[in-house]
Image (cartoon, rainbow, N blue to C red; front, side, top):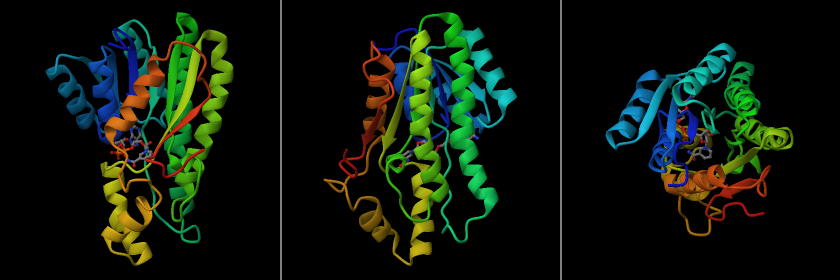
Length: 260
Ligand SMILES: NC(=O)c1ccc[n+]([C@@H]2O[C@H](COP(=O)([O-])OP(=O)(O)OC[C@H]3O[C@@H](n4cnc5c(N)ncnc54)[C@H](O)[C@@H]3O)[C@@H](O)[C@H]2O)c1
């Protein structure tokens, strides 16, 4: 088991990638703080882990609420005796042309991804510094951390910003043994992606099949979506990596959609 007895917080763990990550971390022996805006889905994920013999604590949490973030991390630390890994994964999407984009939607997307990642990282870093046993901070980026697609300006901007935050955490966290990485998946079939297929079809005047074929998978080497398993393998790899050799790096998981 690669994460035996590690205490891990996963945000946005009530659905999609976060739920899969929480379960994968638990299978590797971690005690998982399952945090989500939706308390019921967080509890569902925690129950799935417990039913499979793992250890989990459900946390109802809005990652943009400073007081709530500090309290949730304190609660997990009290429950587990510390915090070793954060996956800042909570995220939202908003599909609109720049000329039609409302300021409040721009701000909402940036707040969840950037403010949420800053607040959860800061809360965990403070405990990691006091504990003196290092740690790993993983930020959920995207292929859109590296390139832009139309209709996704706030998401693209936020995901690019996470590369900077990851590097800043790597620089400052090294003083107390904390590593930072950004995971950058291509399209993974989750509720977030399933919602945007009909939205993009309507905006672009395409069929839903053409949105998948001509937009989402067009540049992959195999016409395949990235999978939950692809993403969780990379997250476990970074979380369990034993040295600082990879700190500050971002990793594309996109079936060749984007290569660097
Ligand atoms: N699915 C993809 O193709 C894909 C690709 C690249 C990156 N990502 C990123 O992966 C992450 C997870 O995406 P997903 O596809 O699993 O989406 P999802 O919609 O299935 O899950 C996102 C979860 O985040 C939660 N959430 C939203 N706002 C929150 C807040 N303020 N506080 C706490 N929780 C909140 C939601 O309740 C939901 O449970 C996101 O950061 C997303 O940008 C997804």
